[in-house]
Length: 193
Image (cartoon, rainbow, N blue to C red):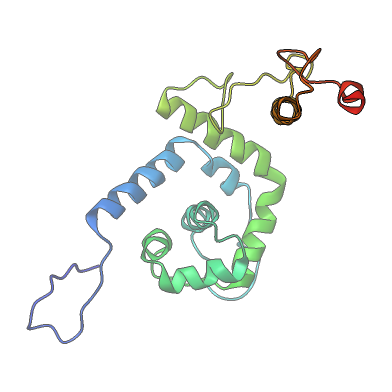
């Protein structure tokens, strides 16, 4: 692929992939290479299918994973990305697989999907230097023990705010005697006042 610079001499401007994007994609491909997910791709036999020349499985695998990461989960979106997205074109090469090709490939991966996911995740964790025992997706650090946190914030806070408003109204009506200073005012007390 030739990389051009914009000048007045060019009739048609070629839009190459920027160097920063190529570095990111090369790091992504290197991560896939180090994850040894390729051993699961070798188990898939595409040579028995008649027809057009076969697409490189490793390139197709990298493109499918990258499409999923970009949120392009439908087969038609993947097919379109092979024509329009420079990153996918960089990953897949000169071929433009059809939605049917993506379908056959993804379907053939299904039996090995848990193992492929596990090998890639292990490699990502080792590259990042993280421990696989603890993972927080959204920054929260709640434990899986459901009985640990019995305090429910919203209803308690809502009742405290309502009790404060009721106490203010009762003070305006000069009915504040025998009201609790803190906490939720019981409904029976409010009814009596």
